[in-house]
Length: 95
Image 1 (cartoon, rainbow, N blue to C red):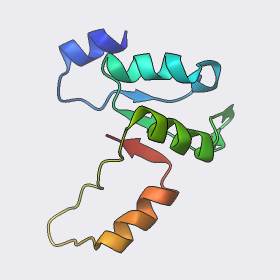
Image 2 (image 1 turned 90 degrees about the vertical axis):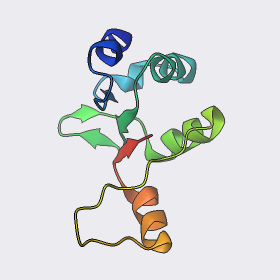
Image 3 (image 1 turned 180 degrees about the vertical axis):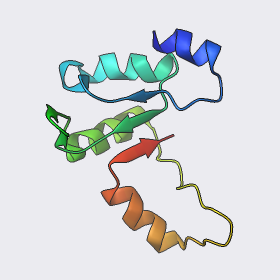
Image 4 (image 1 turned 135 degrees about the vertical axis):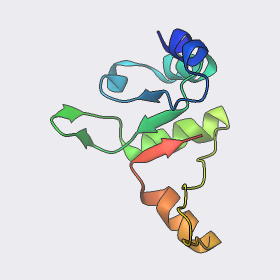
C-alpha cells in the first residue's frame, strides 16, 4: 500500500501513524524503504497508543534517517538552534 501510494503520488508525504506500535524496527525500515517519508511520534495519537519519542529517535539513528527542516512561510525565519529545538520536540517527522 505504501509503495503504491508513493508511485501514484510521488510528491505526497506518505505518513506512518496509528498502528505503528505493532511494527518492529525492521518492518518500519521496510515501510521507509518502499516510500514512507513521514511519521507521527509521541506517546499517543488522540486515543491510539504510539511509539515512544526516544524509541523513534533511536530508530532514526539506526536507520540513518534525518528529520527534514520545518517548512517556512514567506517572511518566517528559522535559526539553526530553533530548528534543533523543533526537531527534538516535534511530534511530526518528515524526511
